[in-house]
Amino acid sequence: MMKFLVLGFIFSTVAQAYVPTLESLFRHGGNPDVTANGVVLNLMVKKISPAAVAATTVQDASLLQETRAEDFYKLYFTKSSSDSMKLAQTRYTNASYADNTLENKIYYPNFSAYTIKANVENVERGLFFALMDSLVFNSGSHLVNYLKSLGVPAKLNTELINREKIEYLANYKRYLLLINRDRNARKSEPNPLHPEDPVARARIESVMSGPMYTDNKQVKLGTDDGEMAWVVDAGNFSAVVSYRTREISKIHYKSPAGEFEMICKDYWLADGTHSMPRFIIVRSSDGESYQVEISTMRHYVEKEDDLIKRLTRWDQLLRGKENSSPRPEFLL
Image (cartoon, rainbow, N blue to C red; front, side):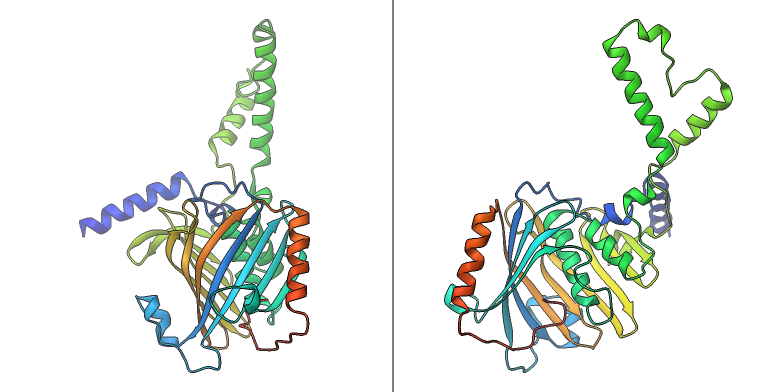
């Protein structure tokens, strides 16, 4: 009993002190900044039995008997601006990912949160690549913008920020710059955060003691498998993010077609410094389940000439090849 009382006290204390916004929560905050503009991931995709989704050891998931038991993909992300990127997906016949095993490529020169349509047919793809953007570039804006396009009551930080508090801080910054340049200004220039008028001073103190962002009550502190976690509940969208590491554990979305879920497991330092889930369990709204294994991740500086050369090489390798094998709905 005492354990639950202590845990409840910790929850209430932390929740009152700080509640992250959706955009902040989905920016993979435990990771260091990404300084390179290019990221490539190697993926191995398996179709698994529904019972394997709840398995504690993901590697032991039993495969369904399908024509192709395993699929191999590479995802290339090149950041071109703050809200857009170049995205390429290539598919291979085996785990060597060699040029002679390339069988398909899809390329978007300008991929954003609005590229994939926000409808029932494409929602799984839209959410999967929004999650990918969050994981590889430490950015929550793509996911929030896609949720908004789906009609989820999500908001960006710019929509939640306390404008009055920002204005007071800007005035105070200008005041500090002024008195640092001119010592005489200390006597003549009033401190904008401490006006003489008591009513104005009380108003400023009230605003400055308040949060930087409006809390729209979509994020709360809870538990996940006995661990403290941030729990998101925003209409037909929900998610769980680790409190300690800020790693996304689960994303769940309800659509007219059914329920779609992604579970991120076994985070590891994929390139030695940046954390990624080793496995993403994807449960589609049609009842199919997949295990996506991220086997490698590499950051690099991408130049336009390098990108053009790679696209040209792919086109040459694929000349005369046709591949119409179906792909999971969450991939391009």
